[in-house]
Image (tube, rainbow, N blue to C red; front, top):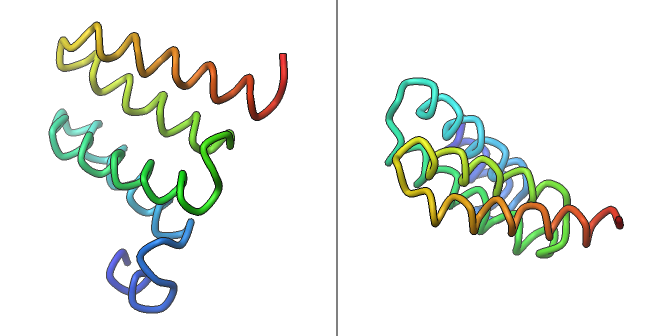
Amino acid sequence: ALEIRIAHLGQTHVSVANTYCNIGSAYQGLGENDKALDAYTKDLQIKVTALGPHHVSVADTQNNIAMVLKATGKLDEALQMYKQSLDTTVQALGK
């Protein structure tokens, strides 16, 4: 599915980002956190480019990354990413 979306929509389409998010979620469920983090990072890069840095979908992906970092014991990095996610949400939706 990923290759088909990239071929038809391009590497920076939001549908491609959503596919990376789904892949990240699957890897996270399997406990393969390095692969999950890689997929979520690709998801984030595309969403920031396509939607801008202050979009709720960007915040959701930042939260996903924070959960993986927490699961791998990288608590300081996880906390920073949770804060980024909250900041992005506030910027997108207001207080």
